[in-house]
Image 1: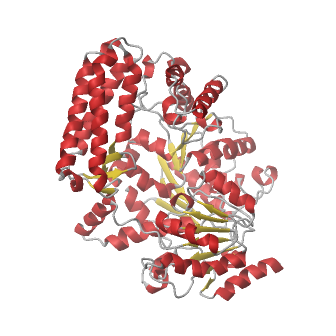
Image 2: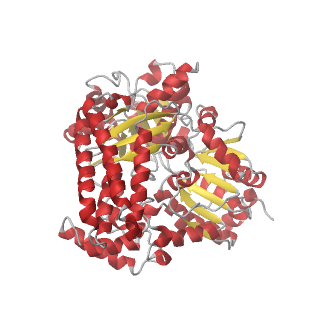
Image 3: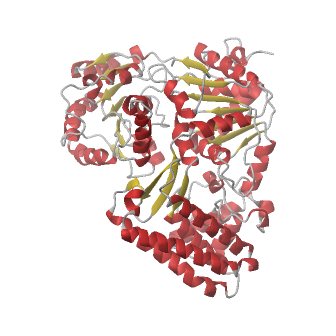
Length: 639
């Protein structure tokens, strides 16, 4: 049998059958490493530069291994792309007949029971919402998967979706009257029977962290886990080993309790007072929190007499509701489920308000109308080590951005890997010819009051030379908003500003414009692919260090300091390097792309740590002269 590298080689079936396929040594090297890792149950960390073809490099050995493999990726969009585009292509070429399944978290699947409830209740904020529910109802009769991604006409953030999908708390499980038709159950059964399952990191860690959703283990026991976009793993793992409780969860609990009362005579009369008390306490607590920063350590708010009183009232309201539900639970499976949720959330509240615990950082965050309490572990390396040891499987971590100046030490330390197999394969793109790094001279420190104005002074001539076709990536929404205010008076190109429309519509408009300028923050730094002439400039306003007011970050830096480490060099710089590499990676997406990367932070050359950032970027010519940027685009026109 041919090896994975041979299958992807010049004499292999992909070269013969896939239009435009070009054998790449880097792709073959990665495929060989993945093949060996699966066969030997190794831990493999593989950085594969943009354009390597890493998807085929891990799918080919996965499909040929004869073992059960779980592939996890960063977003649901990439998950759909893998399952609906890449996997069918590879299976077709290899003639692989094994069973494959796509599995998402339960909130992505229509819940037929809750749809029936919403249909009967008939509560709508508008005629448009009623029409959207009718569209969902009609779709429910024809969909085979129940995956809400199929129904594009109802926006992803529509308030209807939480009403017609289930959560771990409100699912009735096997006692649901529509259990046999449940889309979640069908998807999980298919996954348990499949040889290859494609999931996303959120679902993977929800399952591995034993966040049970009412069906036991979601994912089948696998012999290999392949985690793409693995640079996201440290942060996501921290989220899923955290304990959290939000005002929204408690409000939904009260709403679901009222909904369950509809079919039980007299139940609402006995539950109305404790439900009113719970909802009133949530409002008063949010008002009490209004004078505090949007995010901070829990001990910052617990010392406040008003907050302390309302937290006590919240605990009492949950206890009173649980007592009232005790008398009604036997009358309805739905009310019994609500009672279990009340007890679980009361226990969670008790844990979260115990700020004396030393194993986690207790913190809060505020939203415009709500709040959330969290307890986040400082160390995720140990629980991740335990999970990997328990699985006895191969674990393959891959991304275009895992290394800091060619070394994986930071990533390995974060997730508890000791002595893994390491592979770094470079992008096939010719950055020396295709790209130029421009460091504008004489820019002020990024904290200067006029930093955004001076940044625009530096980049407007670049935009004129490139005729738009640019991403402006900001590290803060405040800087983005300021640039969006000032830029229309400075350039005549179509502007696409994050927040003014859904992300996919902004990108579609940008691509179609031919000369657009897109202003984006966090979510545009990665997972965005604009190949070709539509994007020729990426501007990054400053080095993407994490916000210094993040309570989890502050606690982690303190712990590193106490352990004798250097928090800035050992944590903040490496994480910022990875984020910068992601943003810079938006520029060159194809062998034929050409573009200029503009980095507007003077610390790159004035501070010693700037060398680490520059050494971690692809090797490309560097200039501080605007004339060379203009020449770069003039040469492109002449070619």
